Length: 263
Length: 260
Image 1: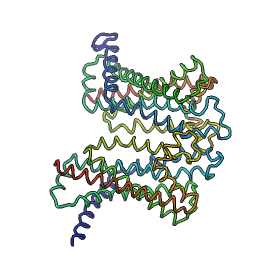
Image 2: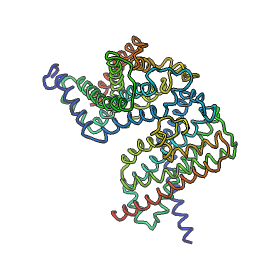
Image 3: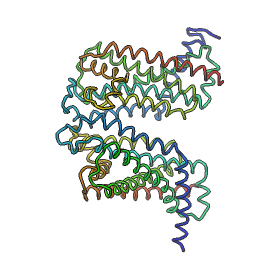
Image 4: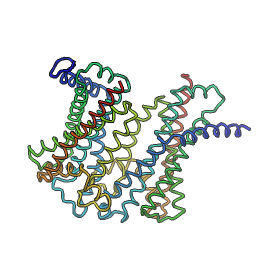
């Protein structure tokens, strides 16, 4: 039964089938679609709208303004939570027994995880399209050029993949939606322990110490550099962005082995 | 005699509601930890906001300490509603309907768990906030009023949870309300005072949002001093939400029992 390519049960066929079902469920079920679209939007509105006065604090000198400053955070946050929501979908499939049928049908079971990951990327693209459109309508200033903006979205893409792999690893170990908080809370924690509201240089105390060693800080600062056309920490951010999906991919592979062993 | 019987009915259900809440760490722990985590992060992340001209205090922690009380109240919507929804799903409400229990006793008793949770939350948030260095210019009397206000708001919001549970009969639907209430909190003067919100439409929405005035009632006690107007508005809004919530829940209960 093992095989690759497009043969039934092969890696690619499994990945495409799983991703299509997962993405179709996302698009056709308002209970899945609306939170994915509305949550980032509310965060964007609340942060960019409600906190715009923060750009007047002494030392805040982000050239593209507070809307762009917050847009990057919300983009990365939606990328990460898109991955977590994909983990929820996976856990739901395990709970309902559907994932067991996947395990029986797939020759190369890594295709199942790849399929969920692909669906997670497609979901994120839908969210980002809406978020970007709204930010531009709201008057977001973009100082970066084409390549820099592509780099920003590539960073978000890797963030999404890393979060999907993390959540998939949890989902396949717990195999129940009750594992939801375990998928969600660490992601929430690491995101909010970064410089969310002001640049790192304006943070002080323990939050500055924690944010300085938080890998999300480099992603955020590089992303903000891209959107303002003044790139910073590019090599570090991409090294982190490439490493995280690999590490969490190994975590997900371990989860898949556990799920296979559980039957 | 009748009032004694009503008291017994409320008492029995209140005891069950309180024990049920206390026996579910999954309800209590997130309601305590999540708001305190956000308080820790936001009070440090937004500390530089105190340098904005016109910011009312030099401690952002004190300013932000009002927020956990509101987040705690949002948890009470979920907890009260989810417990009742479970009673509906398991058929327990139908069995209660066969007894001579009055609907007022049922609803009041069910809110007892929210009262206890509100009390635990308020004492925890206030204690942690003061230990972390928040101000409380109104002293011990102010602390008592803060706890009273927090419990009032928790109970008021809990009544909305009861209404949602009776209306939908589904715990999942009640859980789905959480983001809606969270949006109300976000689009308020949660992070900055009204007068420092620069975006016009956001300022307008926050000005019309009752959550803003509940936050201001807490803040008046924390760093402004006794402000009868702010307190009257805070307690008034809590009372109005409770009355509306209980009326709506009462009607939904009648409709559900007729269907039963």
